[in-house]
Length: 344
Image (cartoon, rainbow, N blue to C red):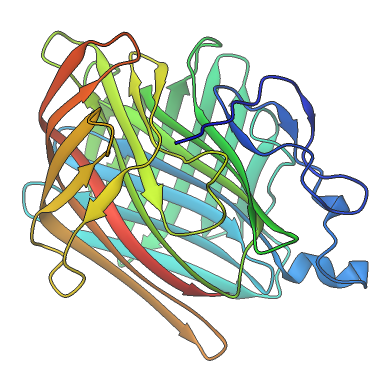
């Protein structure tokens, strides 16, 4: 399957709103000039079709912490959730802000600050020279207190999965996925403090910008963890949206290096998400089975706008073959896989 690698920087969009380049890259090379988006003739209406979000997750041996700031045009959202791998408890809180401009998101994924503060909830994602700093203070998080300061170290040589693809004509998606970012700092939740250390805690980022179809669907699988020898291993797999003839988002990230995959076929039961999933590449490089043990369900129904996500947390087992033709065994890697339907 053809995989076009972008190697030269350029603006994301032409003056008429078309994509200048299509494909994938190991580092973010395109300037996300969303002001050139041309979905509507009347430029002031463009912002209602633009979708932008910064999603961070922190995987520890016992918990998964997630924090998101999003602007999907008609409304903005601030949400967080905590998943307990031991008790299977999942606690989530979402602020939905129709026609708001209180969530600030930067132009590109390489600099700037994402922020929201209403006096009761404060989330700040700040890009610093050596990494990313997450500041969280949520006084009434589903009746509990959630706070934290987390630093995700991002060495310049650490590769990320970047993809730019068209969606139905002038629609498009610009996405950066980062896995296996060493995490340090702390999170306080419900009176309990969790100290984060790089040997046991890893962060991931889903940074998305684009214009999507009103009815959208995708499947995404991700993990950040360790191999027995101490190397980090990450997964980023997915399908379901856009024209991926130039590149997919499928990759395994081994010790900070992208090992690019082409097509990956998913097999799962949409009527029973807790049954095992399979992810297999036709070229034989990837063969995984994912066994869920927690189901997180998030639904939003705002008449013309809505979404439904089934995010399964579980463990991956199987193997993949690196770009250097080395076979790597995966046994018990904790991560997630999700199915998402959206009207937006």
